Image (cartoon, rainbow, N blue to C red; front, side):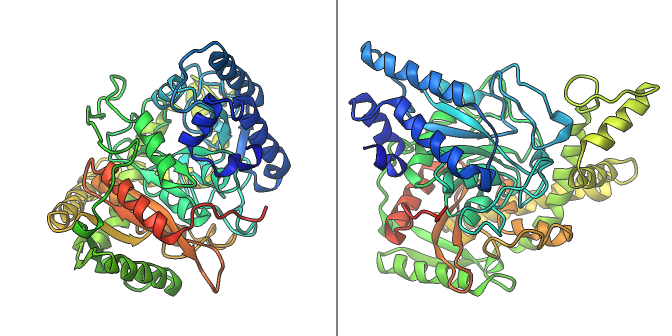
Length: 488
């Protein structure tokens, strides 16, 4: 059983722990040993709390011995992106401005997972304040892709995606503002889910762009993402944007009637700029789905061409407001200075990296007097048009399918000095955040010229997260990618 831990689903792990086939502390031992052996090279974790993980595992084992009731995540070892607060653990957001900060409270998602006996093993690396697509913007170090250590794992949740792909943890949490779960999931060959906006509480997530941010799971199979999403979703009095929405069929996943499914293929997502191998992999899969009775329909999302421009006004504008709190007064880095203004300037100059500064300047400019209507207000109007595109499309189809990324994982240094090229890495994922709809990336194969994982994106109507995951489970069983592991 110890040798099978890596390939057990969350449900199977819990059952094995409950039935005495394996102890919770043995599950922790397995993952901690993998981290110690291989993460020195991969660098997916910013901090590992081995003591807390072992203590929680012992509590679970004792509870079972005493005949107590255990939660749905008992024995499940989980990593957390380091912009989500865990009581007593450091939260750096991959930034020097928060180095040394220790959270005094749990995020809502942490509290809900803790109630289900989740075991938290550590905090994962990210692009600073979740601003990036490669983890090269982390203030501490870059995370490597487990499939090819010369390539990036994606970002900003690159540490979480790499940790799951490398088998350092059973699942992980990330955050997605414009593709920060789906893009690294595609690059690392794992499942990554961005829920409907408002399905999961943002309380305890360090804000980047509040109207776009969502917390979601990474896993090696669709079923595990569904379990985690079911645990962390729901109304939260600490986050007024959450909904009291019951998502049916998440845990367990509901069966899907594949013959009644209609899929939309947007012409704007299958045009130039996408690797031929990615297009070929998706086209081959579509033919397979057609043979099972799925209906395919070509659709248009005409405002797609404005997505990147709108996003890079809305997100930096909200970031400039949210990150104003990091001023050297309340927490994190504090610089000595002659007066208050000098302290602000010194703290932010030394504490923020170049990409964060770039986006803060963009956002502050867009919100400044005389430019607000021309930029921010205009971008919000375009955002409404993008959302309307999806609403119209979903009247005729159940799901929309597209590439998750235009390329497979690129090499370190390839895009870091060209911000616009880096921003285009998220060209297919940004629209779902602007519209607030659920979307996910799942692996469907490997490239031949560049033998790296290929991710496919599935988008669905608001609060159709369960149906989206049920369909993804059918696709997963079809492509048989789950269970494949990189050679560490």
